[in-house]
Length: 403
Image (cartoon, rainbow, N blue to C red):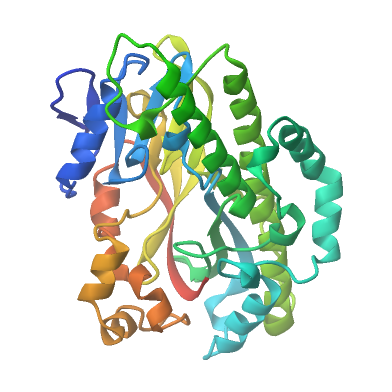
């Protein structure tokens, strides 16, 4: 297998980057160097082609740690990820205007942040999922130990989208099959969990006596064997499970809404459902490590994943090649190339409408920061990781719902 990574120079540690032909801002490179220099990094950092600066650690990085976890590297959108399923619908089954389909989806799934993004009354299906999964009971155990995490909205937000770059899409593949694809995570409760433990890690860092320098307080860590380490592993595992359940609940609501407007159809027996902001125990390069994928997807040999483009570009269902040097990982999307502030300053609504022509979606000032030009070119990103994944399906959006 041809390996296409490039080495990023650093004073300590090793960085292997799948960024050939893809721009990487200086701020992200410095951030990568800071992480690579920590003594508990195992072997090297792996950098995906959608890399860009992020809080705590660089988005698009894979961080193997021995005996420690950096909560801010996992972040606050714990378990954020993608879900996609193919339907029996064909392009010819879709009406000329998809506005009613989009409207029905937006009625079925609350979108946006704040109270408007919660269920007014949680659907009975959500109640059933809560009971069967025991997700609320598990959180109660965590919250009893750490009441400062705060009041939760587990029922009110299960099966809801959120805002920012989260989305629900109807897509067509190369054969004209209709897919449903969505992007969301652990919502407000996951954010509270992440924020709480990031702050606790900073408090611990201030008390530690270390023989090495931690260049950024967001690189504060928990050490394996400490009570807070075990509590964080329990809490982050809960948030990752809640995120997956949230995507399943949302998908069920989206399919129900589609059947109201498009009639009866079937779906594949299995869906692709993958995290891209998470940490878990894995074995790499002769050791058991805590592997944090911050904006990266697991791509073990034969494993299916999802790499979305921007709201006006292509997305991909991919199959992993099991590349050990990337810790069996691939990119989680195209990756931002401009900040939200810069996008709003640079592009007009006319630019956004032109870029999303042919897609039934919001075309107002509220989503201008998500316009396609804010992101790297997805074809260039895919070309830089041909040794990590192979493309199984290429999807093109026809409906995009954003908060």
